[in-house]
Image 1: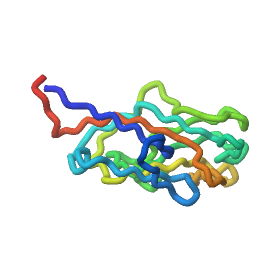
Image 2: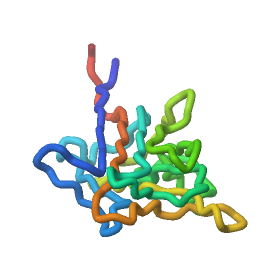
Image 3: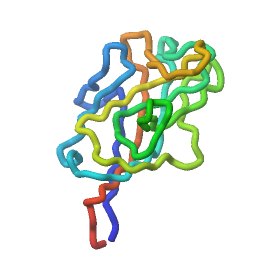
Image 4: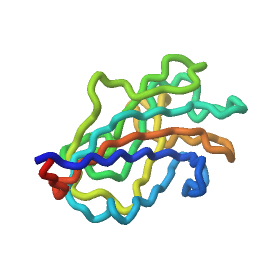
Length: 168
C-alpha cells in the first residue's frame, strides 16, 4: 500500500486571484487550506524547501544588520519538544545570513525536516522570525519588513495523511 502525497506551496505573496491574508507588519501570513485537506487527521509533513527574501525592491531589509539567523515559524503541530518555543516545536527551518548584503536565503539542511503532525490546522500561519542579536540570550522576534509592501517568502511542504491508503 502506498499513500498519496500532497504538495503545499505556501507564500506570503500571491500572483493568482486569491489575496494573501497578511498581518499589519507583513511578517505573518494566514493561508486557509482547501476543504479536501482539512480534518484528515494524523499526517507526515516533510519540508521540501523554504526561501526567504531579506529585502524588498527598494532595498528595505526585514532584519537588522548583524543578524545571522532567520527562520520560518508555523502553527503546524509537531510531535516532539523544542526549547525555542517553550516546549512547542514550530520552526519549519532556519537559514544562515552570510552578510548584511545578503538579499535572500534558503533553509540550511542536508536532509529535509520531517515530522508527524496530529492534525493540520484549517488555517496555516507562517511567520518570518529572526534571533535578537542585542540580548545576552538570543530570543526569537518577528522579522518585520518595515514597509507596506510584503517581502516574499515561500514554503513548500509535502503532506502524507495516514488515512490515505491506495492499493497501487
